[in-house]
Image (cartoon, rainbow, N blue to C red):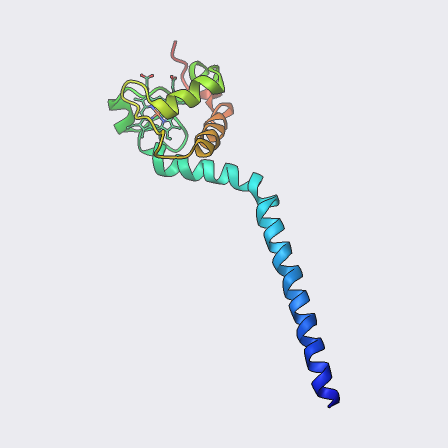
Length: 129
Ligand code: HEC
């Protein structure tokens, strides 16, 4: 009889512990990794959607150069505002396809943030004016 009364108590404890873990997981996935994931997904989006033309460092691939890509590391591009660049990414420009509807607005912002990381590395790149 004693065991019978202890068992439900253990169940309740296990349930409570499980619930606490569940809440922790929900809170953690909802809050903390979001910021870290943003840049990761920006890089991911870039790799899958932009790299074919712009190359891993933004300098442009052979395919991209045949389409007259601009060097994403260049001051010409980096000096443009976020609003201008995100508009090009969403609507396209000349041979650059628009990505509106292909990727989400959040992904456009994330991939733009990734494009911004090319700036510092562009110092040694040949300057085109
Ligand atoms: C099919 C090839 C291609 C793909 C894929 C591509 N681009 Fe471009 N991109 C271009 C070309 C070509 C230009 C030059 C457009 C112009 O200024 O004439 C360009 C220009 C740009 C510019 C500079 C805009 C400006 O006005 O200076 C940015 C920023 C850019 N692309 C970002 C991206 C991002 C981010 C992605 C992925 C989501 C991407 N591109 C995918 C071809 C491409």
